[in-house]
Length: 357
Image 1 (cartoon, rainbow, N blue to C red):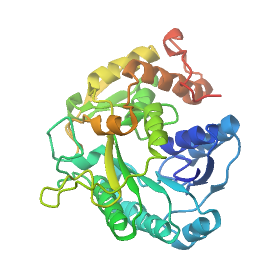
Image 2 (image 1 turned 90 degrees about the vertical axis):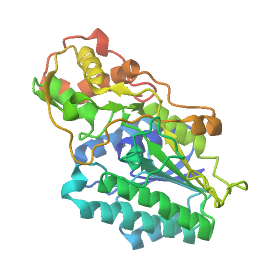
Image 3 (image 1 turned 120 degrees about the horizontal axis):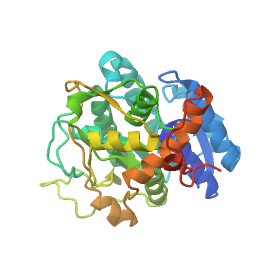
Image 4 (image 1 turned 30 degrees about the vertical axis):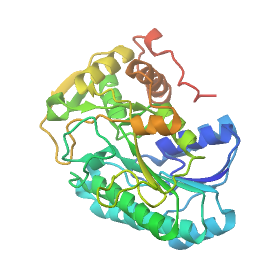
């Protein structure tokens, strides 16, 4: 398939692009390389993909640019779109709300319009476990209520789900929304907990644990995310002929639209997570326990039974295995140039599974 991957220089986007190229797909990449975090990391991800799987067309444009996006679609006419470009981050949305309005809402509308004018076989778009918000009924099911988001980021992702549904209903665009649960692994974003925690532990700095470290998260390794994406790509949703208008199922529709959780249904206490990371680094963690932050969801846990039924797969990488792969990459990318000593070489010797050529 000829697949457009937006956010191709991002964490999930780079891994997805690499996997698709290795499997023989034609990939067109799009990324704006903004400075929400260090653009050099994005450039390094692209070089990593190119060295491992060859060159691919990569457009340095923004989904907010309606005209440029239209020209890209008209030129390449992709068969499918994996939309991963977005303004990420929960806490960042408290100080920079308009970044989410521009990228996650206006940008997504531009993408939907492009898919309408240049029909695609399948649009897969990133949502988030944060849409469950104030709902404390875990494990989260796609059938649960998501009417009470706790951050603008979460609200923008819920809005994406509704926007995609309206275009599926009106124009027949087959659209699948994926609610990712705390994705981690090599090449992750610097603002994500694995990077923040590993950096603090490695430099002997206090590690901030909000909600006094009482959070639980359903950590999902990047390879499991990509495996799910690749398996879903050739399976666009069709209209659910049994959908009940009187008792509507929030995860399906009479339109060709579907929502899936992607998580392992194995929530981990944050302190266990930190202890595992510190052990793999061979160092001690200094904890700074802080109150719950505005916008934070206390616990997450995915009911991924619908995903397993659809593709015969659910995330399965254990936390020990996944963090070992992450630590190996983190040390090679961040610690070696700084000459920070490696205390436990054996614990961190694993190469990221199937990702480093």
